[in-house]
Image 1: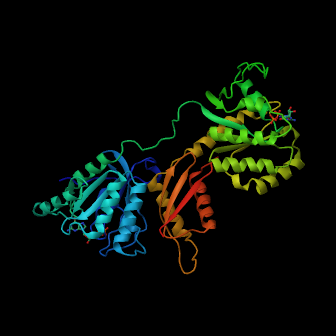
Image 2 (image 1 turned 30 degrees about the vertical axis):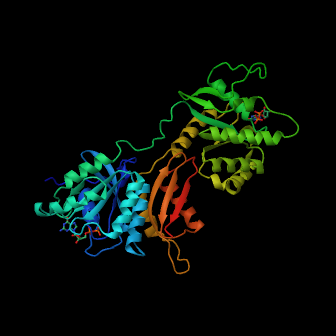
Image 3 (image 1 turned 180 degrees about the vertical axis):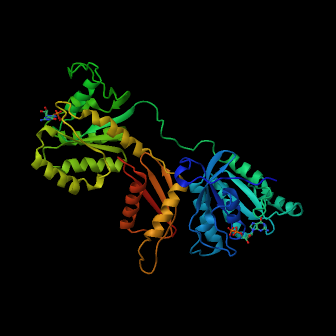
Length: 449
Ligand code: GDP
Ligand code: GDP
């Protein structure tokens, strides 16, 4: 008999990509007692009455040197409408957010009608399931556990959450069910990073490109139109290679009188789609225009990272600078998060600031926040700034998970629809807490009817 020794890792030091184990089961089967045991009895609160709402649902755990996150679905039950429905909802959420599910049954009670729906959801999801037959406090009751084989969820593991009996074996089974490495990793896409230089005509895109190519000290044959131009260009900057998308389109300007604008914006859009990060070049000596803002909109919608380069800085005097600052506040408020650099493409002044800005933006774009860390942040946020009451109801954020990176995409499970203002508030606080420099953030809210 082994008792798990699991020193809890503080959220900030937790493995950000730790796999997630969700614990599902009816009230009173012993989920929180089990979670306590898994995380080392340090945090989860066990109350002797069913359906107690807990503040936290997600905890960091370590077993045999492997870090993982435990999510206790028992806490998502503030306004259950029918037991069967509420645990089915738990199971739905669990299979969406977890890498593996720990389904807890009280071996003495056995399977009930409300468990049947859960079993169907778990089997359909294809997610690995570990079946715990809890409250097997001694050898005598062990036989009861084996009655659970017929659920078709594999071998029931007898355990006593209360006394620790069998909990080591249970944890071994959970670890075996969790993926060795996180399911998706965007950090190594392979190949050079892909950049699109975009902006309206005459802001200095090709001048910037020429400066960058010059930094590379690779001789660029600029006799445009003589040979078949490669569409993209590989340029060595700051010790690595970058792929600049559709440089042919920048170098060889399409100047047909009609449809010029249409083709230009089509090219811009396709370049952004193919890129990971966009450099929006704005002529700093002129007012930020409608067209600049349309390109920003395209970048936000495509979810790409963004760096803004104010070019022609040699023409920016104190007065222009004053107005530019106002325009940034007014017109670029939607992309406040984008790193901004001031450059003079014509002379190469401050061109060396581009690569660090690109690297910061790509880093923000690929940031992943661990489920444990995210939920302790959400717990604090909701406690300090609850959603305003709307027609007698107060929607609550129950649980969140980062579903994707590049760009960071968060899914929030809530007890009701959130105000747009509250969603913006959450995004703002996410940025304050975790950075996300240079990247749009996507928030998906899933209210539970
Ligand atoms: P939850 O509602 O599923 O989170 O269940 P709890 O963890 O709150 O446990 C419900 C009740 O069952 C509590 O009184 C626990 O002490 C008790 N309990 C939990 N695990 C065991 C166990 O392994 N054996 C026994 N005998 N009681 C248990
Ligand atoms: P593109 O249409 O965006 O590719 O812009 P170009 O690179 O062709 O530049 C348009 C015009 O702006 C050219 O006359 C450039 O010489 C000029 N230009 C580009 N960068 C700068 C700069 O940093 N300062 C100044 N004063 N002029 C610039």
